[in-house]
Image (cartoon, rainbow over all chains, first blue to last red; front, side, top):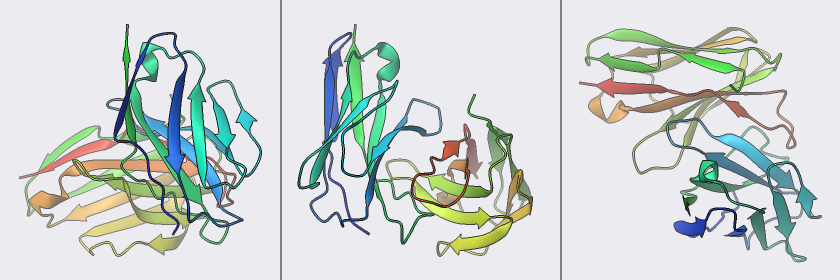
Length: 111
Length: 114
């Protein structure tokens, strides 16, 4: 399974944009990039996913590098509720049942 | 609320006890999952069921026994556990097993084995 690398932690101030990076240099051409987050005392929740093109939804944006070896999750205006551990996960169509979680990035948001 | 509920939310058991964790999804999904989250370790996939058939058993010890009687319910039967099995056990569901399907997680059961 292809691996992802994320910083252990990041900090942001409320209402500022946050860019959460993820490196996945061994990604294959068919791997999807998924992001989940886990708020304190809760199960993970889906944030966004993409394959090649940048993606936007109500929660965040996903910017995917042209060579697909890295991606960035963008929270446009961080709120205190966005404080969580963010996981970048590669999902293969040949191994579709598996979400393989790494250690993620712990995001702290300060008022 | 994610549409996936888990009971109990907290469980303390001795090593000789037998207990069961229950998961129910109200989303009409066809796939369900058990994950284990130990302190300071990434989430680990334990079991995957699709249309009530087990499709993944991720080298989990036999003291953990899953059961999926229908597509809405998933159980994890526990017996003769060890203290190192103390963890947060998370249930999830998805529409199917294709790459686009997002997984919806329950709040988890915090298990302590004495």
